[in-house]
Length: 223
Image (cartoon, rainbow, N blue to C red; front, side, top):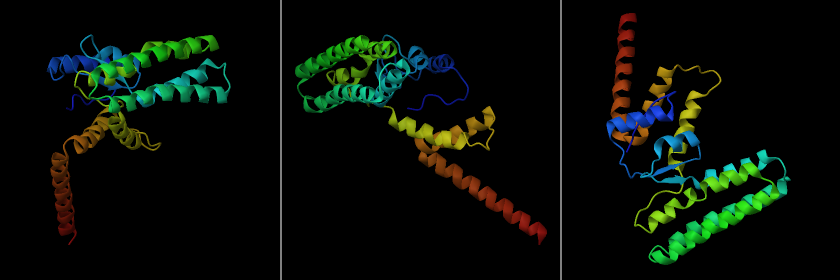
């Protein structure tokens, strides 16, 4: 379901609009990267939150770098270990889909490993990384917990991020200086193409026909 489309609005404003329209269920699940403003505005006690797997690893890599007390090889090994923890859980959800009790034990084991991981990082003096891992150790396993409740959600937000990459390409050229209205028009056009191909095709054909007729009329005048 497509909920909102806007430019230069805060997450709080968007959340207010969504709530007023009453289009998002109270028990909806938010899957996103770890931007605090987004999580704090859209997730609630009823709305569970799944941190994007890929961004979890990227953020760990960045936090390790910003802690600035480990060499590159050590940081790479720590990042690899974090990947092993969470991607092992991904494989276990596939293996134990029908065995909910075993899967619950595997989830608890992953949370415990992340706690041990935090302690290890603390010993290394990586304060920023420790804070991040502690904050999100429960959010990275939401998808697995929901499988035990017969619910399936994605582990990442790749689909929408590919869409945003395309929007970025069209809005962030050095030679482009779009107004907010212009950016909203581009955004609406691209989102329509992704979410409603039929409407997009009809709109494109209509505009193409108008453009063709306009050129034809200009030729008539010059003839």
